[in-house]
Image (tube, rainbow, N blue to C red):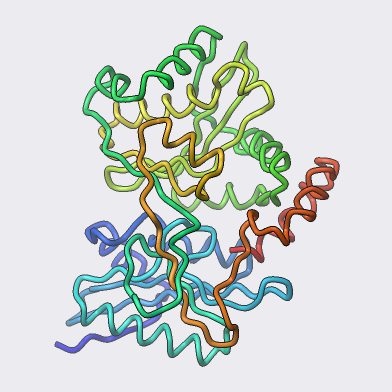
Length: 343
């Protein structure tokens, strides 16, 4: 039977997500719920394409258009997500989705089409595989074995956190999580996501989106929002107060996420992406995770080269320093207006 490509409509979500769950190429970021989040929170028009054969979904490609007077006009798979791109059961479905995505990109008049793959698909397209790395590793089946698998220095840091009296709990107050997260990104000079983004994630993904918060003497110290998908746990948005480094709060936090996930039967810890040679990159390596390059591929239409909107770009350094000096309340108000355009 021939492959047919269609756009996701109300009523197609169950079929879409059933394919995502069984596809080895699909990730948490391929789930259909992201379309709702991107539209309702950021106002981005979505182009969620799926391929079907004889009524069965055989491939998906989540796309959203990010339009900005400052950063350009792009069709991206997928904005604000580490992974995205084509996930298909066979080459025919992959080619059909790819062809339709390029047709729509040209019809919309965007400057470029972007796929965020873990492995290359278009070896002839311009790409960035030198900027980001992801960190994924299988967890041990038991808590003690899992703890011993952590390099000795980081085990010592976790014990330091325990000695400091740190305790972890599931967080039910997303606003409290946001307060911690917002302070962290402000220190980094990065615009903050709006509170309603995290509330939307929790509403759309339910128990597959949960927050762990570490406290010392009842006071929050660090916190991280985690995604749970198949047998994987993905700590995704996190932050901490100044006190966190003094008491090894980050090491204790990620050990708690790992320990709890292991107890619930999850088997793979996805530490997410980091820019090469940054503090976060080396932190994850110190935990025994090896970097795996990410391949972000670009089909260019109205621009000569691939976009470079990351904070390491020297052209943004002055803006970052200015942002760090803004009062926190001002940065929290302006941040959501800026971040929606970054993708």
